[in-house]
Length: 221
Image 1 (tube, one colour):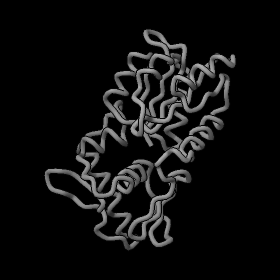
Image 2 (tube, rainbow, N blue to C red):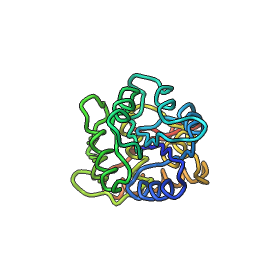
Image 3 (cartoon, rainbow, N blue to C red):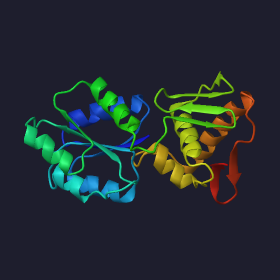
């Protein structure tokens, strides 16, 4: 799952980004509200972790500028502002949850998982197709009950293709979705990634699930 982390403290930003990536998230980072707006305009995210006291453009303004509707990411505010009116204002501006600093990283993960479970969220935690079972929350995948030992990026690729079955993803689109905008990965690395995923699926007995549309990209039908 892809997440935008918006935090002006470099120390906290780096710590959170490192932990979230280790937990399986693809993370982009922004240090102020204007930079966050640029990311939100150019990329799709599942979650946004948003500080309120940001330079150039504050977090409430970022919230209010975000589109309403189904494509909108879930927003978890992380703020030192601990007054009730601060929480109410953020929630009224469009935040889905609010966590006061200082906080434990484990609670951030728990809040994100809780947001993903909300009934209004159309995203399924468990995806199943052609004998493949992928549990996004547990970060586990299997074929006919046999566990697939996938790397984090192989797992993210499989989730992307299963979640959007029938849609063709070009290499550049896969790169943006699973590697993040700061990654130095290349189109060639996506070819290697697809090869590795196909090989592990084949070894488990799952053949020809990931299709290559020459000149277009990859999909699972």
